[in-house]
Structure formats: structure tokens, C-alpha cells
Length: 433
Ligand code: ADP
Ligand code: ZN
Image (cartoon, rainbow, N blue to C red; front, side, top):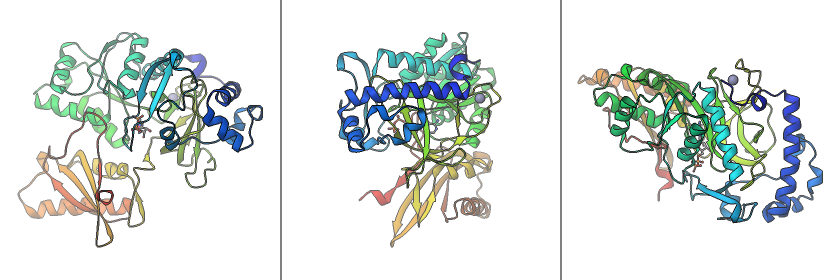
């Protein structure tokens, strides 16, 4: 179902027009209320009058995570604190957390975007929906929660932790939909199996997964283990939280709530805009945000804008899956490696559980990459030659995809730590002194 036909299916001309008008207003606003942006624009010899259409956006300065840290805690806010009704913080995956503030209007837009997303997956007021993103400063829990309530679903604020109790609720309350990280979904599947519950008897049918990168192979794995449809939701606290972009039933790219968040893809090296289809860094301008509006925020997330119309009827542009963040990218002996490439290879082979870890080190001035992966119980063998052959097969596949050799270490099921939030796939010992 399309929640907001008017805003999700506009003609491209109408959308550009709306975006242009909103951008003009936004630039005026930040110029007068955020000293940080006024200074930046003055340095570039720009005044709000220079921004007339959405195409003028390229004249504006970028904003980085460092800017947010330098202006911690309230420096980027564009309204007095009396108008701020909620504060969240980024989860701090890559450093100190950054603080974000929302006005009442910002929260209303957020719940609307989240409802668009849940409706796109086919969820309705008839669904019983549990939220297993963490509640707290992290935007996942409350963001999904208010969206699901706005949709009218029956919301269960399960949060993370105590997964057995959650499974019992899924069974007893007939929970039909769940929101969590993809890692948590896998963990949930394991706990259901361990508790001896037949997944087929549960009513669960829709999963709303995001907050960390995951691959198509991981989607297949989650769908077959939990007997559900698994959909991708994307967001980040600096821009809003979950619901910035969401898949539709086509499962082919995520539509951006473009009337609120204007996307650009830039080359992280030259900072030039890249055309549709080319992979680069995703940049967002918050067109309607009041509390902490941002101009051209560099997300560090790598993806591309997809070309062509989507058969679902939405006209809002789509982004491809996030391949990872530029700071997740490992450089091993000069070659770029993303954990998602390793995930794709491992999940393509039936012998492995979808649990893996990359350990990077430097030995005698040479980078080393070790890949730990769990072998499924039915493929474990006491015959060393069989295990060695399996190890070699994986090492060969990794080499052909990554173009850099990896030392494979096979481990038994349940050896690698599970996560109910964002999983930690990489241990880079080069960074630990
Ligand atoms: P932090 O940057 O501290 O992790 P957030 O909790 O706001 O802060 O997380 C936002 C980040 O999570 C995004 O910038 C992106 O890297 C990642 N992310 C969120 N949703 C997805 C998704 N569906 N696919 C891939 N990565 C995602
Ligand atoms: Zn679509």
C-alpha cells in the first residue's frame, strides 16, 4: 500500500519544484539561525538569494560528522531549546556520539516517513508489530515505534535483550511483523530453533531490517529461516533516524523520502557530484527539518542512485543497497575490501552459518586478513582432508572476489559472538596500539 500517494508518487517536475522551494526556505533559515552555516556561506561568498532552484544545491557547503562534533552539543541547532522536544544520539559506531534534536514538527514528519515505509511492506493496522531495535538514545527503537503506532499497528516495544521472552511473545501474541537489525533476526532464528519451536507455526511474516549493511544473500537466509518477507530500511540519526529510505515490495532499491531529504551522490575524493548509476558517497540535505537542519551532510555511506521507474508506482528515487561506509572499508595491502563482499561469498556456500568475522593485522609490515566462519553442524567432519578441502574452496572464492588472499579459519557453530544490535564484523588490530 502507498501511504502518502501525493508525496510518494509526484511527477519529477513537481518534486523538483517542491524541493527547490523548500531548499530556498531552509537556506534562509540556517543562514539566520545557525552561525556555523552563516560563517560557511560567507566564506564562500554566498547569500540565501543565490539559491533559487534545487540545482543550486551544489553551491552550498558540505557538512561532516566532524562539524557536528566541533559544535557539540547544541551548536548546530536552529531553534531555541524550548522548541526541542526530543534528543537522540548516533550510536557512535565510529567514534564519539553526535547529538540531534527534534521539534514537534520534526517528530511528526519522522513518524509519517516511518509509516510510509511500513505501509510499503504491506503492514497495516491489523498487524501486531514488535520493535527489537534498542530503545534509548539510538533512533531505531523510538523511530520505528512511533511510525508503527501512527500506522495503527499494535506495537510491542520488545527492545533488545531477553530474546527467549521475545520469542514467547511472538508465539503467544501472534506477532506478525518485527523490526530489528538483520543480525538480530538471525539470532532470533537460532533462539527459536533452540527453544524447539516450529517457525512454521508462528504468524511472523514481515521483517523490517536496517541499521547495518546486509547483502541479498543475507536476505535469503533470513527469509528462509524465519519464513518471512525481509525488507530493508535505511536511516541515520543525523538526518532523522530509520525511514529516510525504504524498500517497496519490489525489493530492488530503497525509495528516498525525497520531499524531506534531498539526496546527492558525490565522489569522496573530488567531492564532485556523480551521475545516477555510479557508486559514491551519499549526501543528504534535510529540506524540512527544524531542530537540526543540515546542508549536504556527508553520510560516508557508499551506494548509487538507481535509474529508471519502479514498478510499484512510487516516483521517488531509489538508492542501491549500502555497500558499507567509507570508514568500514579495509585497505589490505593496498586493496579495498568491504565486509559485505566477504558476507556475499560465505552466504553463497551452504556449508557455512551466516556468522563471520574479519580480523586484520600487520605482521612484518604486511597486512594480513583472517576470515573466521562457522561451519554448519551437518558439514562438520573429523576427517581433516574434508575440512581442509572446504577451507581451500572458501579461500579460493574469497581470493577471486577480493583479489587479496585471506587466511580462512573454520570454527564450530555458535563460536562467534552474536549481536542483538549492530554486529561487529571487523577487528582491526592495526588500529590498536
Ligand atoms: P552511527 O553512525 O553511530 O552508527 P546511527 O545509529 O545513526 O549512527 O546509524 C546510521 C548508520 O547505520 C548509517 O549511516 C549507515 O551506515 C548504517 N545503516 C543504517 N541503515 C542501514 C541499511 N539499511 N543498510 C546499510 N547500512 C545502514
Ligand atoms: Zn518501488
